[in-house]
Image 1 (cartoon, rainbow, N blue to C red):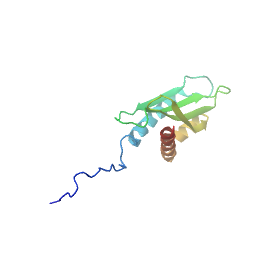
Image 2 (image 1 turned 180 degrees about the vertical axis):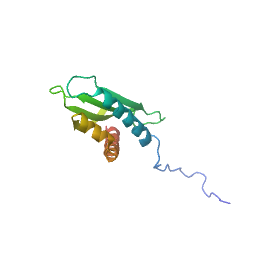
Image 3 (image 1 turned 120 degrees about the vertical axis):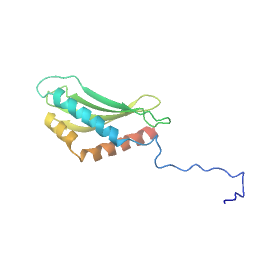
Image 4 (image 1 turned 90 degrees about the vertical axis):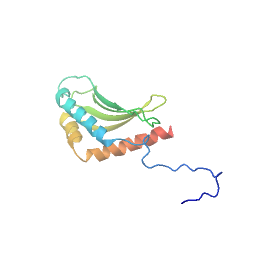
Length: 137
């Protein structure tokens, strides 16, 4: 049996390492990347214009540190074969997107990046860095 000596003691909130507001579900990010890869296979073209690809997921946590994560592939305005893959997290309060470029190149280079297993580590590091930028803003 535990006996409490001081019933007026302050409760100290511990920093939970698995805080749901700071947690990025990498399984959902993998699914999102597979959706982006599938669309890029069919829609990205090196010899004509195409509409930008934008896939995202919404963070439904109660006390969240970001509103959504988006992956975008857009075409360089100067040349057909230049494509930019970017990741963005949206600020939960003001809706401002924080973006980072992940890869630039032709269709093959973008698809190689998306299908590479080591790219997930790069993406996870970028998402963590963006999350820190959001916290500090």
